[in-house]
Length: 186
Image (cartoon, helix red, strand yellow):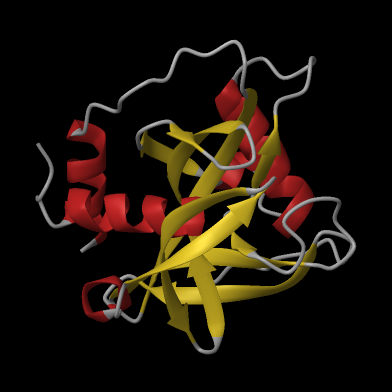
């Protein structure tokens, strides 16, 4: 399955958002294969972080001036948040840039990491890790719900996994990833 994922993600041509108004951010969609099944690693953000407290997300964050590229941002943040070293990540491609309700443009990179991996979470940023089987994305009951940010109400995708609500940009990226690996993209 990882070979199919690698081939389909590498072949995908992502849409790029050129924006000077939004805040640049990069995330890694880390995956590995365990017992012949691929998994994605998500983080449950701590209640100590400034924004997105307690939300489920991918490791990543805002671009900093000393980052050489958005991919470097994503890899740096992945190391800071969950202890995955850049040298342990095989970036196989990326998904579409995505605008968020909170004014970010997220550039998502798909990376394969070895299994087992000795994660080292930063407790100031990450409450715990979520190991999401990719097969769950085909069976998840995807719902729609309202989300409010700065008096602006939007309808967003969401689903639950083991009691954790996965919604907004994280959910949209997971759905796009699912469609790409299932060969359902244009």
